Amino acid sequence: MAHPHSKYRDFEGLREQAVALRRAGLSRRQIRDRLHVDNNDILNRLLEGEPPPDWTRRPNAKDDLRERARELRLQGWTYDQIQVELGCSKSSISLWVRDLPKPERRDPTEQAKLAARKRWEHELAVRDEERQRTKADAADEIGAMTPRELFMAGVALYWAEGAKDKPYDRRENVIFVNSDPGVIELYLAWLDLLRVERERLRFCVMIHETADVTGAEQFWADLVGADRSAFYRTTLKKHNPKTVRKNVGENYRGCLVVRVSQGAELYRCIEGWWRGMVDAASGITTPLHSGKV
Image (cartoon, rainbow, N blue to C red; front, top):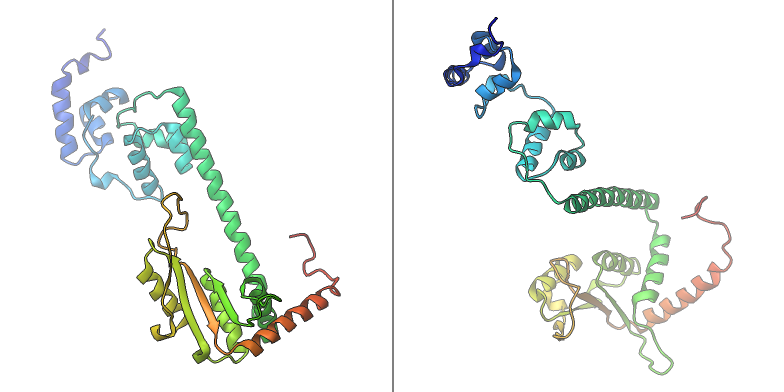
């Protein structure tokens, strides 16, 4: 009785035939039937390194995952790491990358660190999604703002961030400083509500000397919609080589100072409005939310 693998003794000759058929566009099934190769392991060896013809690759929803899995495998990722990254089953990953070389075996400690890092990155992504959803829901609660609501918000905003009169330093100037573009926009909308003419406003940028000063000046000018003639000379903060600045990057634009000329009467009103709000707040006992925030 002949050995079951006797027909594969001329392996190289059989491989030449298999490669030729593959390059002619035949599928694995067609090659198997044509050469009478019933052993899948041997068929894999015969076709090793020969890509399948395009017509056998049926597009499906997992094509992108398959390509990404192959990229990660070539970078030396393990099945476990690819599974955590892509959320695919190990069986699918095995089918997609089985023709690629195996990565070098890593130190178990290093593998544990990589796995922990991936889990932590996933956890951070989940937390950030929850954080953004909470913010979006809170923003929707505000809805349209009435003139009175804007008026009250502006008074509180000024008293928190604006210049204040002192018993030992009577000035009664309306000067507001902030680095948040949204705060500046709300403050200007409040001044518009009070019918403070834009011609009475003067601006000044305060910024670190090593930052993009020109870019910051243009940003604030565009935000407030004012001509550069309405801006005083920019105030530059000197750099201290002993300190490490954290306010860096393209989003750092310093602070904007907004001054209202001839603002003594307006300042007195602001101080009075604030005092009235404090007195009125003590009488509010009904909570805005039904639950805790």
